[in-house]
Length: 143
Length: 155
Image 1 (tube, chains in turn brown, purple):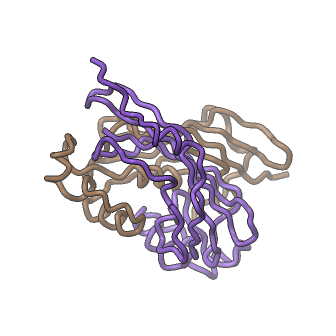
Image 2 (cartoon, each protein chain N blue to C red):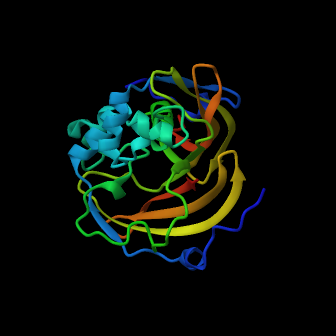
């Protein structure tokens, strides 16, 4: 795993290390099986087109899980995610270069928890934020 | 252009009613499959020895894990009260996850779901119906481990 980061080292305005993703149709089928979401818009192109979609699209919940990976990689084994959420504003398609990103917005101590808040999002290959969200995470403290 | 409301009395009555619990045993293989489908190689989702060194009983579930889709030991009304949807097409509008305890392999979770709200909007694809749902996951010690909120869009 990556090095462990500590609360004291994280500054407001800092970027979260980016996570690169590019889903193949195969990955969408794997996700369908693993998550139990067999809705055909994610693997049947004819079905997707009939549903007024541009073609098969990436599952919203998979995009949400990628943001979870962005956060858990960032906080490391000693940190934890308290809460995060996102809106699936724009559709993402297989084959596109998708990046998970984030920026620190707040830093404070709440009881024993050393908390960092961040804006998080996925952007597509054109740099459009398709999946904006927010997160509250806990980092270990050096103290 | 506004047509009549698609929200029925049946839908309004369903708001706030909690479903019967669905009971799910969290198993290692589905967690590993799930992590692989995300493309997340973090050993805490794959390697039990690694997870134990961190103080867990077994591997843990990645954020975004949806255990309500596992094959349950006992199936409750997992989608909450039933009502007829006016549209056949659906999109996921958003998810929110609030974590209290890590979900670990071996946990037996009791999962209940309720419809938080339902409303309609005129969107670019015509009338759209938004449903807000809340799913609560409790473990074998009756601790709330996860609350998941979702926005469904039908059109």
